[in-house]
Image (cartoon, rainbow, N blue to C red; front, side):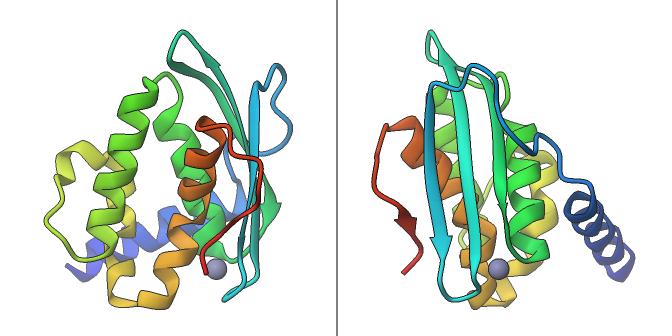
Length: 147
Ligand code: ZN
């Protein structure tokens, strides 16, 4: 189990150092801003939705390793997914982080955050980008906050 944990930690550190889909998104149709005052994480998520499919997704911002890695892995996981699938994946991911039964198979790489459920304060870091993504998909204008 400790080897798995180290592997997970490596992946989180890697995505923090080299975040995927970081920066502007050409052709973005919707954007939302998120803020986690507890930790100071800030994120902006931009999405390009066509015919109910997430064609493109990118993020910007600054935050702790968990929030950055989570945003990075989220963009990788959601590209090409249907909007309904994206929301369902968030529900499964959130379930795992809050210690509920979660379908690990559906989560794929996102399972690297399983250990975060032991640190309730960090759950907000790991879900910030997801809450922000959901707001973007729903076309909400006001800033998303975890508080
Ligand atoms: Zn954080």
